[in-house]
Image (cartoon, rainbow, N blue to C red; front, side, top):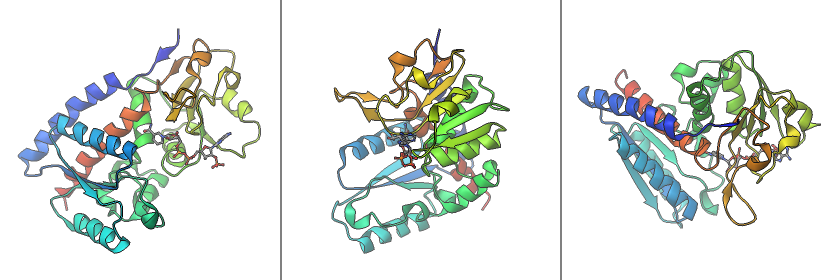
Length: 287
Ligand code: NAP
């Protein structure tokens, strides 16, 4: 029977560590604090930022959403970011994407200083990841969450063949590096990959980060039913219902395990953000 690798038990367990860690930091005089920069009223962004704030409240860290006007000028926006970046009481900060058109050209990944970059997008953090120095880096949240999930469910990565579909800077590329750092043999595939099925059929673990509803079906899988499928996609099906990249009904009974959408990778991303916040807050002790 195919197992569902749900995020709920992982998050519940990790939340206990987060609560302890947060309390420990407070006793040492550090009150973990995150600022979220939100520009405009994109409905999805309003929900995402609210969920992140709610999650911080669960382990009693501070989280403030700095809600800026949709029409803010570039100068005003950069001033706000600078002010937060320089605020010693703030340990973590991120800019919720997408930004309105007048700000779209800004390289937001490198705006937040690396030691507060809880999204893990700054080039210094990515450079550490590239060099295998994961302990000192704030890692990109979605791939970090996927590793946490695989470890929770007892999936060892050493020597495994991992195929990552998608080469974005926020999911595919860092995911592949993290897999390699865990001694997996990782292959990255994308829209120009020849014969994607030949790659996926040879994989022990498939991570799909394509962004196309029900893209991956049982035709991409081997006959052994022993593959683990990680579904990063957040798409909508023809009825407007949230769904992943993987056609769950079609692959069920043809794989060892699959992450559901919703209730899989999404909450793991928020968990990683919280872990990054506490890592950043702890590091501030040794500055
Ligand atoms: P992205 O930047 O659009 O990248 C999509 C990748 O898929 C690209 O590398 C693209 O290849 C590749 N691709 C497209 N069509 C393909 C095909 N037919 N065969 C093979 N590869 C193909 O997307 P992203 O930001 O990584 O996000 C991917 C999905 O994950 C989206 O649904 C997004 O909403 C979701 N997501 C979820 C979370 C979460 O927390 N659950 C976090 C982040 C993203 P090319 O590079 O050649 O164009």
